[in-house]
Length: 274
Ligand SMILES: C[S@@+](CC[C@H](N)C(=O)[O-])C[C@H]1O[C@@H](n2cnc3c(N)ncnc32)[C@H](O)[C@@H]1O
View (tube, protein in one colour):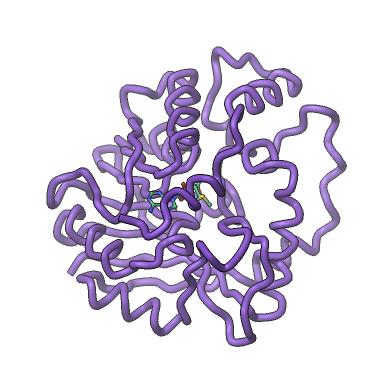
């Protein structure tokens, strides 16, 4: 069990999230009874780089229609819906935050994807699935909230089929001091558990996974942040602030500063069960 699940869940819970999302979609001119993964994409991939990062992971894995994917720490289900809609995969999402799971189920049903994408509340440290159950595990901006990484990677290995793949997006420590907070995953260091890159590699590999790719995405994030901002949206403009709250820009600015100052690195990892 996560050492401080209540604090983690509290960090991600806003209250009234579904209403906020539906209202933003309505203002942007969408029919909220007939949604698609594409329409939701600007606001429901809750990690750095949004849907573009999910696509980079999908390219690295080469998903197949008959894959059963586990989305660990699935948030409100954007990446899960993307994989189902684009590749025809069956996806199971699990997340600690009850509000996210409720919203994930509702949005998925409004996209007509509930037969292929299912969600349940749970802790990644105690996965309610049998051994060898999944072809691929997807994890995006999750590991920073997990103190006990040995148990998490052990659980990932257990539920993956032999030669099954993990693809993850993770922040790891840079070489220059502690990060500035708040960040997307934590207001303070209390629920932030970052490892130096070599320790991260070690914990993954000693738990039965072989790292195939370790791709630095830090510079890409900093370069994207330096581009002139998109024209400030009309009321109802869609973006990660809708799901992550009005203080999202402050958190994101800190993340970019941490990357620029080498207090954090952002990595895409692909690993295979040995
Ligand atoms: C930054 S959000 C990313 C959500 C999603 N992966 C995405 O990219 O759209 C991190 C997610 O990890 C979840 N999380 C953190 N610790 C967890 C745990 N021990 N078990 C399950 N989910 C957890 C949070 O509830 C949150 O939804």
